[in-house]
Image (cartoon, rainbow, N blue to C red):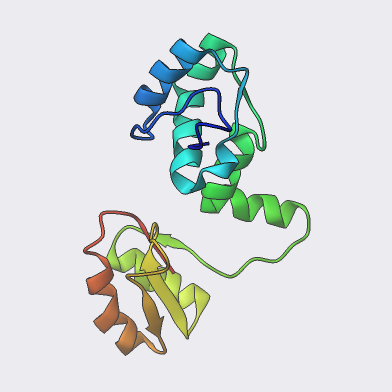
Length: 150
């Protein structure tokens, strides 16, 4: 919370695990609630967990577990989890090269949405209605340093 009247302490700092670690060390909270801070808070909470900070200071993650957040973030783990409970997911694949992307497109079929694996608000992607459009459009997506999804 950034409202000084609601919180015991207010910090206007970068939401980065090393910065948050120092705050945790100083304030000694019982818990963190990363689900109220958007994508940045979720990423930070996962890194705090991976770095052992939460365990070191006895801080509980509330609202969601690190495993649940990771499962929701990781496309492959999410797909496996949905299939395990009987839910269908969109046909998709991950490609790191144009050759892999063409193989995924052939498997998924057209029309095919191609996009960077990580995108804010869906920017940087588009729809190819056939292989020719796919081959024209796909190279522009490769500007992103992230893996690509179809």
